[in-house]
Figure 1 (cartoon, rainbow, N blue to C red):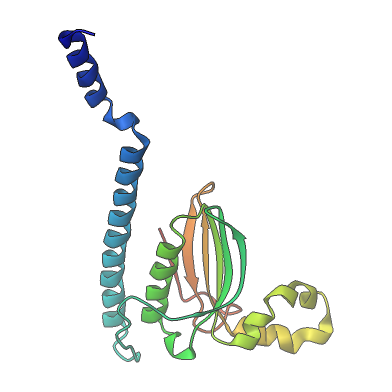
Figure 2 (cartoon, rainbow, N blue to C red):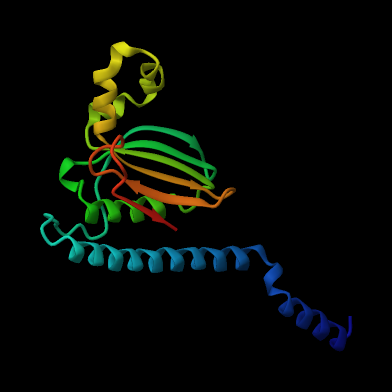
Length: 183
């Protein structure tokens, strides 16, 4: 191979950097991290605006993280994130629930589908699997009331349909929703 041919092939190789999977995956990873950081920052602003609108609510600094306990999980890696989570009753206010919505959205970013139920009582969360059977039987009216009273949020995401939202129910999910955040 002469020097001109070798120079042309090196030059052509340098022009096709975008075909290198390592370069492409690194750029995509950096892009995802940038989007998460930007969305996290915009979420903080949205929570601040929400707190200003409700000056009488007791709100504390959460630094963008609402602690929760996972009661149940199901799903498949990178495809479906399904879980039932329990938060402290002290976080059931619009500002903290808005923060939680952004947090769940960011945590589910790598999944195509997410279904996350939020409760403020562990016993109510534990009823999740049996609630459909209870709905058909009048003997379980009190359990259903308890379940719905403590169901305080729902995050749904489906990349195929474009749904990406967090619904907040400050008075349980039998009452009208307090706020719906759509992305």
